[in-house]
Image (cartoon, rainbow, N blue to C red; front, side):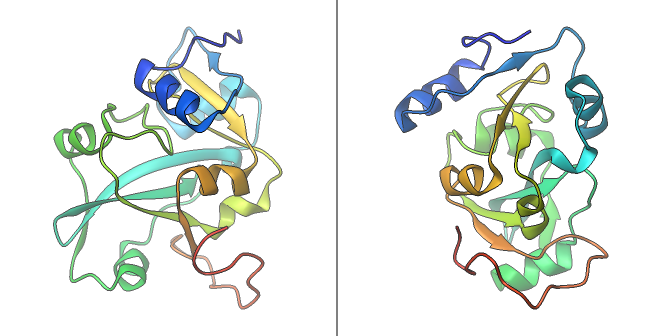
Amino acid sequence: MTTPDAAHPLFAAALAELGLSVPVRRFPAATRTAGQAAEAIGCELSQIVKSLVFTADGAPVLVLMDGASRVDTERVRAELGAGAVRRADAAVVREATGYAIGGVPPFGHVTRMTVLADRGLLDHGEVWAAAGDPHTVFPMAPKDLVGHARGRVADVAEGRDVREERGVGEQGV
């Protein structure tokens, strides 16, 4: 079911501030995991955007990763020039973003933080991301999504060879 008012109020406010109108889909069953979201939407697992919060030297960092891949924290550490990168706990995620794990959207957070978007997201014409809670998602072109998130494209997926060709600049899209 698609409803324009289905987004979490904080995310709906962010959409309005950006002047965006996106179709938000609400599902009766949770789409908390990438697998659940892909199944509900009927898309490839790699078309799901995971919005994952880490801490780099204690500061929150958002990593946008496709649903079929895992984040390589060593690559994130190197990309940021940080001493240590760790997965944030639920309290840090909520404090930094305003959302609970499983519903964190790629933008519209209460705290401005560094955003890294894995280059693999750009392999699709359309990706799906959480709209503020575990039951809602929205579609967007990956380049637009990274731009609205004020993200920087980087190679931070585990097990993927770093590509030599750079279709998108190092500083973002």
